[in-house]
Image (cartoon, rainbow, N blue to C red; front, side, top):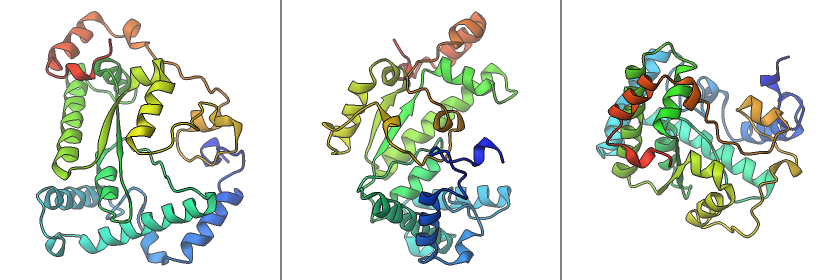
Length: 256
């Protein structure tokens, strides 16, 4: 059993009472068929290439405001959206809450979730200084500085296009500001989403959590928010200059 299979409460997901209850509740409202693909990631097909093609086709129609009746793969999308709605509803019922937070690193999931009419949907667009983000990306990909920077530019442009084109309620949150003044930034986010900011606390480990994803965070003990600045020492000056040159028109993403 690996740590990635553990819930943040300390139990394995299989033995966690919370997730076992959620599974039972959800499966009473859906069929096994809808679990043939990864529903929370809105997977159209198991095959990665087929899924990517279908997703891009569906997004094109959605972003160009095609009538839902003629959108390709609309039946599958309705099935995926229904599952996600049911999952959120059952989690909120069990916890006695009305607000649900989901994290994603790609805009696709936000786009598809935003189309669920039952949700009052808000996006918090968390972005990092391009120099820091490119450095982080290079830890996981054998890319050149130029290619990694271009990928960052394309991602930021796509995010802005989707949010504006679809009129999705959103606010921009800079990673560096969140690390430096977390109380101020989180209170601003709560106010943006029309939530009560008076009960906010950074002491998120004072109560039991049932978190999926982000292994080091959910299983760790550290509650301190710390800005990572290792890019300043580890990136070559020439690489920093390249990133700054390529992102000269994206100054709003830079930290002070």
